[in-house]
Amino acid sequence: MSIWMKTAGILGSLLIVLTSVSYFSIAGKWGSVFAILALVITLLKQIIAFVGFLTTAIKLLVILSFVALLLGVGLMILRSRKERVKAE
Image (cartoon, rainbow, N blue to C red; front, top):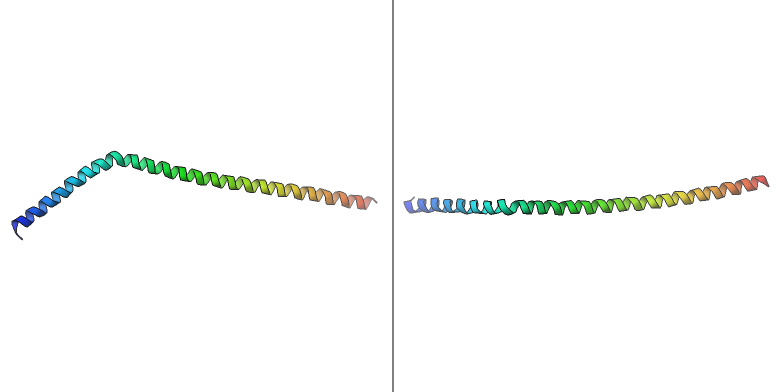
């Protein structure tokens, strides 16, 4: 291999290392900002999903309580009707 190919290879490698170091310094400055931004976005998504779960759970609880109330009223009506028929 000739000397100019070795020199070009070494200079190319050095150039790549130097540009990557400057890229890492930029990533060091802005990388933390982007990481925090990504974490905040992820947290907001999780909070929205949790609120959706809570509203669904509350809706089901309200529906089940109304069903239980209607069943209780229906049982009271049937018992009073049965007692009235028994009394006659």
